[in-house]
Image (cartoon, rainbow, N blue to C red; front, side):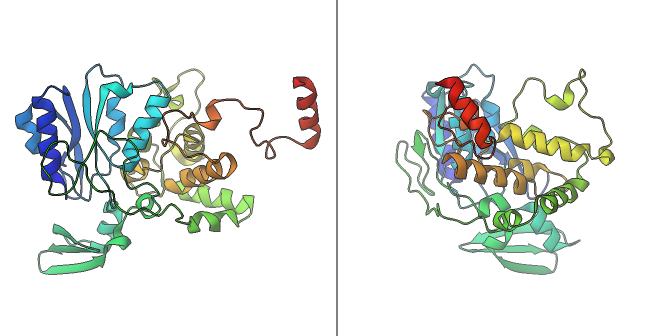
Length: 336
């Protein structure tokens, strides 16, 4: 783990006044968790860590700040930084990106399910395996089996934008790290299974999926794409829906939130990791991301020059799924 390198780089950046603040991770209050850390003094850089549970997307902490900020960013976090730049929420020159190549994060829900009532006291990662241990038990699992769903299908493990790339064990300031291998052709097998179903079957699948939702909005609060000053669910007039979620309002909430993030979502999985009841929320967002990739040949957060296709109008955009042939002819007549 590149913890020492991160601490060294963060301390140096603060000492040289390159940044006023470094945002990273520190141990969480409970096992299998981390929490955001806001470091303003070089002497406090020792609080920073990087481990298999740095699942939060730190990009959201960049919003509405007037300081020069350093931030620890893996592939998905860096992509959200790009999204913010494109959406004019931050300026590139105000952000110092400490990039970290990422092999994926572990899913605490999977680990808790495997351990049952046994209390885990130690987790070690050795190459491609994870070793869980506690009182009178030690269990070993292939690392891939414990990865978060979004990490299993991650196409961008390396930061797409950075000022310095961290290399594990390297503490020299200004060095360039080495990226990890990526598989851009990773298939969305589970999404393809959904696509083979009828519209009625998919609707029933997602309704059942969100039956457990309590409308706590943890997913929204964790999502870097959800930064509206007032969320639609908090609007008093008109009132979209009320708790409890038994009426099916949870399904409506997740559909509307997902559509709001379509073309902007980076598949970071922060929403799913934040869910207290373990709903696989990314099944819905990954389906939309696949549609955007297929229809528009676009993936969010890869270029600071290219806006989301759903945020601009282009007469050449694919419209087969919207317009009938008759409406296309009328539209062409109006614009010609």
